[in-house]
Length: 574
Image (cartoon, rainbow, N blue to C red; front, side, top):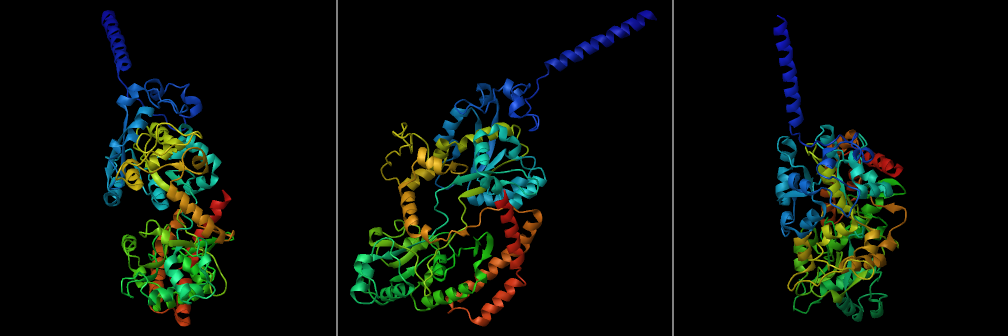
């Protein structure tokens, strides 16, 4: 009996030793720490397989993020739309250079923009087969709130210890941080694109055909205007412009024997640039496509101002007289640009630059805003953002978010940002920099435009190009510099200091529900009425009053305005 007990005890000891040996020999996959435990202060001291096995580091920007073993055994799948002209991102030199510098393997799955818009919801709905991240994600505030609540997205703000560039950006720019924070839980779920040139706030400039205007002056058709005034920065009164446009309309300005193919004043109605909004500046309104601007800290809608009615009636008069080409309200941007080439047909037009619109840009000057009937002179203030939120998101199924985020953080280095935005060193830029340490543009290959070279070789997306970069790392493109010079002369001086564009704002779920229920109807209601007024002779007092009643009633403008005001107040309080 004692012998049996001893044998049983020996058998139990042997089994325990065997189990221990099996456990110690079992190969475990590296496992990312939770953000709370895996901070920069304690990761190096802890037994983290990412550090111990794969050499994960994020503090030295000149060293790889992973070692050679990590480069071989860890890979990420990133889904992204791309421009039709661009190379597959897997074949881009900048991506190969980033892999060589970081040892982080990213496999890009590129699709067209239209395919992405169709598949976006399917990707988010398929929990079993999601990529690690989406680049060019185009995520709105509502989508981020929805998927953050469902734990679908990685809270990027929990991983800032691994992102020295992005973290420093948030600390130095609380305004950018305020545009990214999810109001519901105070976390950041997306990476932004930052390209601050000072261009997007004023997307329209008025160009005037100098040769045609000289003819009108010589004919005595224009009061108070001389040849020597025809230079960049010219400020015409609305009365002078009306006289000029009338002359353009009635004469064979391009000399082809016809008087019906001249287009006195043209634009692209409701386009993001080169639109009709600056015409409202003649009546002192800083209008834009949303008709929403911040004045003295208050979110203001121009469509509630009596001056908007007066301006609409004035502009409608020019349309009725044929001074504004009616095609302006129907044409696409591509048609507008195509019609400007070859034989001159444009007397005056709104666009960012004359060089892309007409074949002979030297025949046009850029004008300051027109001076209206009561002496008002101001300009459109667009809500086009220079900071784009929602560019990149990570899915919570990503196995090593700290590694992928450390990799994406390199994109915010200004030298990398320049290459992400314009193309890589070796193709777009010289290997050596100039005496000021700035990147030097290579000569363009024969038969290739700068746009073509850029679109083919640059993925665009998340970057940080602002004042520091433009002064120390990379020059603005010549055409961007020209735009900025023109805006400094003919746009920026005419925006009052108390008028600001409406920035990217973050909303609560309740606020988003209000916008979802009413804002589309508001925009449709404004659009339908405005195009009818401009094309059919203006708006009567009775129709205007009815419009105001509807704004205050069934389309709930006051509720929408309050949502924006609350969000703006939170933004400015950050």
